[in-house]
Image 1 (cartoon, rainbow over the protein chains, first blue to last red):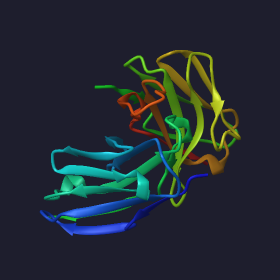
Image 2 (cartoon, rainbow over the protein chains, first blue to last red):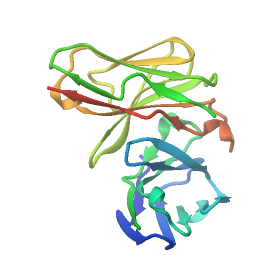
Image 3 (tube, one colour):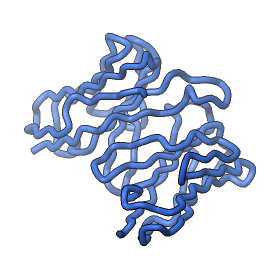
Length: 110
Length: 118
């Protein structure tokens, strides 16, 4: 099956810093989603982005499908950005085939 | 906003007990999913459902069953709980499977149910 690798596994930032999280995948995808899991366990969908670039406030994401990677950018980080960021991919459009990466744990210090 | 509500945030059960985890979504989504999340293993799909009374096995269905009698409700059942089922259980839903690039495939998660089996 498709392999998903996220890097870095852990990231510690000072408030206000920028960061880039990476998701590499082993095959072509038709479905790619980024999620943030807060310290209480709630997973929130950030982007549905099988290709192209999207922005939402301080967050943006770019997927280069032909090169099999996606990047999540966080600008001017805040303590509320802390948590684990997951990339999930599927070769089909179906969510039942989704494979989640191991996540990047982000800690933003005040 | 779509809301996915899981009935219990924390549960403590004893080995051999029957456990029900309930999940309700309020936006008429066709697809519903149950995952478990364990440290070092990430999120793994247990079961999913595309329609009422329809269910499909995911990657780790052993020891679990599901029920979807109404479109908005998807229940996960542990017939006889064991200690290795101690985990965080996450329910999710999506509008439908679209055979093209579409927001209909966006997954929305509940807050999670942390189950401890003693």
